Length: 287
Image (cartoon, rainbow, N blue to C red; front, side, top):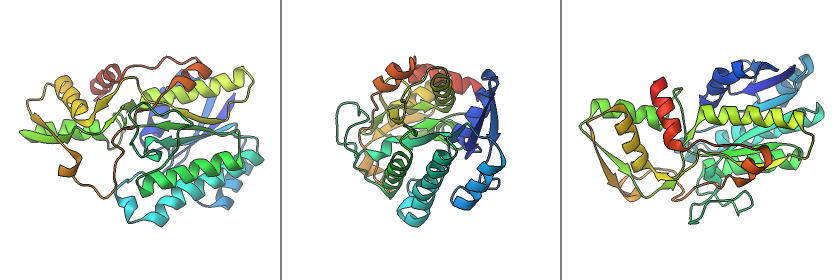
C-alpha cells in the first residue's frame, strides 16, 4: 500500500483525484489544504512528513488567479515558487516521489506548432513566471521530480470556463468570447487519472522518470469554439460572437498559442489521451 499526499486538495485537480481514487485500491490518500498543511512553511512540511510515511506527494496547490497575480507578485511567488522548493527539498530528504503541476503559461504563445518540453519558456505574466520559477526549484533541488504542465483546466468542480459559460448561457441572450487564443482544454478527471497512472508505472517499472511532461486532452481549439461546444452540449440558445483579445483586455497577457505536444508522456507511460470534445461531453453529463 502506497501513501499519497495530495496538497491543495480542495481545488479542481484535488477534487478530481478524490473522485477517481476508488479506482486505485493500492493507494491510500492523504488530502490536505492550507488549513491542514501550510506548504509555505518548511518546518510545517518537515513536521508533517516526520509524522507519517509518505511515498508520493502530488502538489495541486498553487496561486492560480492569473490576473490578480499581476498585483500580488509576492504572494504568487510564495505559493508557486517558495512552497514548491519546500516540498522538493523535503521529498528528497524522505525519498518521496514529488509530482508537481505546472502550466502552459510558462510559454509566451508566439510559436505556431505545439510546444515540446524542451522549448524555451518565456512567460508573459507574473503567474507564468512564478510557475516557471517553481519548476526550476523543483527539478534543481530534486531531479526525480515529475513536473506535469497542463492547460485550460476545467471540471465539474470549482470555478472554471465550462461552468461559467454554462451559467452565463442560461442568464444572457448573447456572449462575446475571444477567438484568437488557441490551446487545448484539459478535463481535470482525465489529468487525475494520468497522474495516478504515472505513479503506478514508476513503482511497477524501475527507471529514471524525473523531468517535465506535457498533458492536456487531444485536439486544438479556441476559447470561442470551446464556448460553442459548451452551448451545443447544454442545448443553450444564447448567441456566441467571436472577438479579438484586444476587445477583452485583461491585466495578465495570455499566450496566443499554447498547444502542448504530449508525445513524451504518451511514449514514456503508454498513455491514451481522450479528445477534448469527448471529455467535455462527460463533464457536461456530470453537471
